[in-house]
Image 1 (cartoon, rainbow, N blue to C red):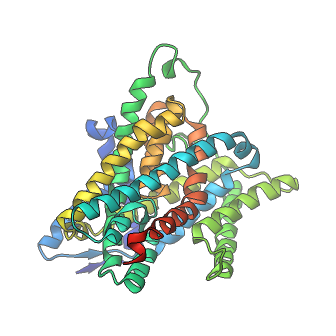
Image 2 (tube, rainbow, N blue to C red; image 1 turned 180 degrees about the horizontal axis):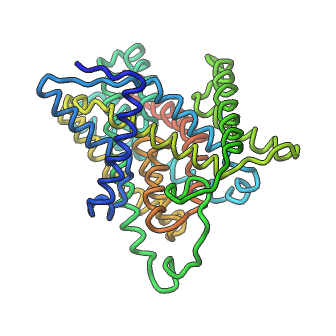
Length: 402
């Protein structure tokens, strides 16, 4: 077994990003279907490690940097959100939220229905629904423990982790092809191609050059550090209370307060260019570490019925994005980008959603509304609504008697 330390893992993550960029640049299929660079590079490395494991060679990474990078990314989302923009996109956020709620309901209905049809415990269907897919590894681990201790479901946590891994991979793979299919529908005379070019903002088109200065960079880094510090302290205060929230939500909230509070008091104006650069760096490195350290052999251990459920969930996600999300959001270019983002956090996580949208906007052009709506819904609302939906399903009669 080879154990890479902090520095070795950082080097490996950087190489994964360079590998991903090289693959997307040179492989037409990846470029045509808008596969995010961290996903392309990370999956190749994960597959290589899977092959090495078959030769009884195992490589482990120091993932201690993964959580701070994720939190830094969410801090930059908060620092990018001003109340004026949020007010402007209020109605669209509400409509997209309806699509998100609809998917949560469909995922759980699909999981429970298929589990019962395949002779499995319906709790397994719920675990392979919104708990581990829309909820991700954190939600999956929490509910897996509940299902094991309260309902006596064996290996619930392991099933949740494997399902969340499956969703993270597929969420990063289907968003680009879905967007490509939808964008073909809106690229018509007088449509997308004839629009006036828009200047990218925030997380849009991450490869665009942005002029920054060392001092403003340090100021923005300080704001991110304050968001991390205060956010984690706030999370600690809310722990085991009725208002408990995931740490990243607290960090994002502090970022929003800093951005808008300092601006309202006339004390400081956040530099969006620096925020976007630091946010994109954090996002890319986080995804690289997360994907290259995936234990794909956990997926191989999934029983055939569970694998069938997860494949069905992936197909449902793609169809839902095409026929519900896209149409509900207006059937235009922004709606196509939103559909790609929905695939990302509907199966994986908000960082995957952002990476999906970046891959699309890097090729086709900016979508400011998508980068306003998806981070706010994916960070603020999805976990809260998911808990409500899960508890409503657990109130069904066949769960009460389990």
